Length: 158
Image (cartoon, rainbow, N blue to C red):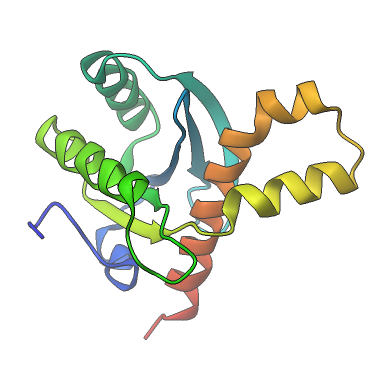
């Protein structure tokens, strides 16, 4: 790993006043984006971007990083249930490498094995229609991923 990657325990050292953390859930067709509050305790869904050419998505994400004063990015890493990495995890690592090379803030990869399933279950329990679930699942999964990293970061305070 390069210095563009950080462990969740090291995120606290990157925090600045008014800076936020950004969470990403990389789907095959969309990218869910979430943002933390300035106190770094709560994640909120922000937007869902259509996946396109990497350069276009990188430009959209850089604009979000700048407008939200992002100090770091938490990207969900889709590990297999046994903890091994399959093709989706390898594709996520490649996206993260390319995003780092495109000028992203430091990146933290976060185990997201249960994020989409947990979000879908919560929406089904709330009786959200299938269409509304499809529209919102990626940005909500990004918020779930980011919230997990925030909780871990805040729990591991010295």
